[in-house]
Amino acid sequence: MGRGPSIEGRKNASDAKRGKIFTKIIREISVAARGGGGDPNNNPRLRTAMDKGMAANMSKDVIERAIKKATGELEGVEYEEVRYEGYAPGGVAVIVDCLTDNRVRTVADVRHAFSRNGGNMGTEGSVAFMFKRLGVLAYAPGASEEAITEAAIDAGADDIAVYPEDGAIDVITTPESFLAVKEAMEAAALAPDHAEITFRADNDIVVEGDVALQVKKLLDMLEDLDDVQGVYSNVDQASIEGL
Image: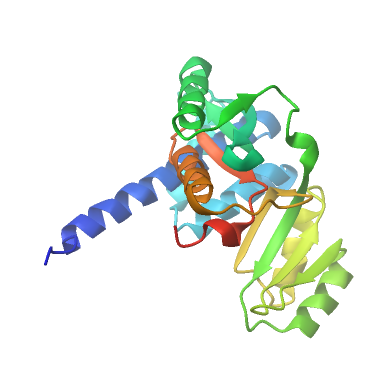
């Protein structure tokens, strides 16, 4: 019987994944600070990116250094935001948000991921109309629906979604009110388990068999690209879980 990965091997893989997450967050902090200034009190996007960094156990020094590089106090790399759209097998729509210092490299990497896994890239706007951009504050099963609902209404949330299969709860906001609602929920001692501004599809697509496997491989390959910040699709997540 074959041996599983060694403790050192698992640690190295974990460290590599953590490093990749840090890289993505640092890029987001850099772009936010360059676009809206280095003061998080006057720059909601920067505040959100910093919160993400702290949630990932990123040190304050690393965060401050990224801000200083972006605002010109230290020499650093400039990143630009690019978005690609396309289709995975089975007609699954995909949006790929990137931050890059080399657009030629990034588009080649994204196109390769699509073509290698049976998908194809589309033109700008070809799938974005199927999605809504919104803020999501996610609570794990076992959280108090009554307390969260009451606090979310008071905070000005748009909607509350309760998932009957496991009792998980999402508080939905507009992108503009995301930070204010998040802070209000935290002040009410109801900090979410996960919070982000994301895209959600109007309708999900169920895939099966080989198509489901191809979709999963494509989404995973896109997520793993260094320049990719976020991958959004309208695949029904239950279709590809466990593959």
